[in-house]
Each structure stands twice: as C-alpha cells, then as structure tokens.
Length: 115
Figure (cartoon, rainbow, N blue to C red):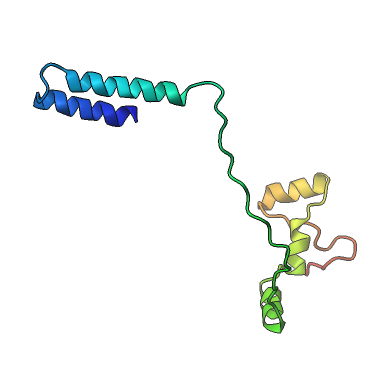
C-alpha cells in the first residue's frame, strides 16, 4: 500500500501537475488514516471456518496387477541385509578398505557370499 502510493506521488511530482502539493497532502492523509485503522489495537483476526470432514471410507484400488508391480520394484533380501550394519572393528575395517561393505550378508544364517 505504502509503496504504491509513494510511486504515484513521485509520478505526480515529476509531472508537476499539482505544483502546490495539494494532491500529495491528500494522499498522505489517506495513507496515515488507513495505517492507523490497520494497526489499531483490539481488532480480532477473522478465522476461516474449516469445512466438514468426509467420513466416508476411500476407495482403494489394487489387485494382482498392482501387487505384481510392487513385487517387481521391491527391495531384494540381499539389499536389505547389505543395508544392515554389523557393529565392531571388522565392519569398520571392511568399510574403510573397500568403501562398500557387505553389511549382514553371510552373518548368522543370512545369505552366503561365494568367493
């Protein structure tokens, strides 16, 4: 609001359509009055009422096609075991040397690594 009115007053001053400054004084009074009205204490903000929620159960689509697609992109058991990290010195050394650890593969009945 203030920036727009300031821009208008500068245009009027540049064009010198009101050399006495009457229009600028009028706009200044309007700006001050509006600012005082906006910043007056004791005004409550209007709160927007939320709409009534839908309690209907939503339709869930699926079926064999969707299940097969999920299985196609599912994380493999090998990748899941690789993401688990064993605690201890051996795990730290393995990660430091190769930069990529095998995680829990081959530990306690998991997948075995063939050499």
